[in-house]
Length: 446
Image (cartoon, rainbow, N blue to C red):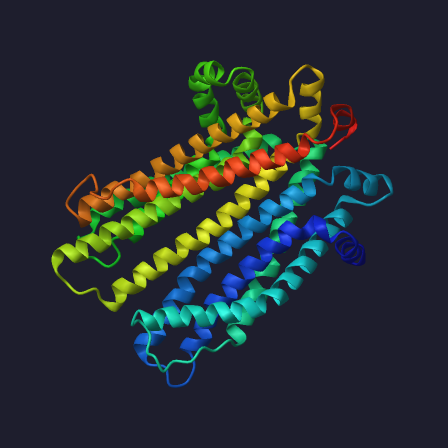
């Protein structure tokens, strides 16, 4: 089956383009930051520079591993979902579920290896750029030379390939069980259990913020991780929360957008569970980016108000926070775009049926636009709730003000990025899908 997987990748490379991009970006980021471990361990590097480089590599490396897994998982889920006919044909030809699983795993491994090899050059340049940034800010000595060695290469292959294969296993396992109609209830129970655990742990982490002193170096960790866990928990329960929001918005959307608004509400209520795959990256992006940036801004203002000079540790913390937010933005956008593309392009038959029933292409396109708008509002709302739950306790302890003085500019910028990615992907994909004649679209089985 591995040889079949290699031939599948070679003859249809376009299908694996999104997976290759996600794995390539992940491998480049992981190797770039882990090259700082190689640099920190080189002879002649002073202790302060070594600690700064090791801390950056360790923190971002952990975030990178998780984000690579989720980004690759989203693209592979799209890939497997669009191959129902191919998988059914292989089954009818005698292939067992285990053989199909190994074929998909082989495809993922082949794509991950190619992506990691392609990422070596950009990772080398990225690691050098990171070192230069640390040196320009005075966090690393100027005489330290960048080293791209075995730690970076081992991390690139050791994270990207297993993460890709793990994500592929989950994707094909989920698709196989869904096709068989088994274990959906069990999966739902585990999902709800994980969501409740994330909410409880997130709430506990946020509450522990009040146990720290205002000048404690670890003060930001508790509310930051609490906001992240709360974002995950709210994302898990987003289908139910989306239905509640739709009940409130049904009449306003119908009054403002007419038939397109009514179609959007009807379809989103029916597809709320499927749309959780779109809401999750939206909620995570909004919650993590908003919480991290505002907490860092509060920290900077508190240091400035105290009249103290920012230490190397303070600069390290700011650099790490901004870098983590940057990584979150990249991978959340990848997950969001892939999920939206799959959710929209997979509806070609549905769009054709609506057009044959009397809906115009403009009404269908308007429906997709309204759906994207509601998704954006829902994701931003849930993510903001999670972020505020971490920001308020941190501001209360660090700045002695329950409501922070920072304005809405940062939040509006985050909302603009989320809205642009959601609306652009949905509308552009829908326009391409609507180019096919309605009769032909209905005849296509997806």
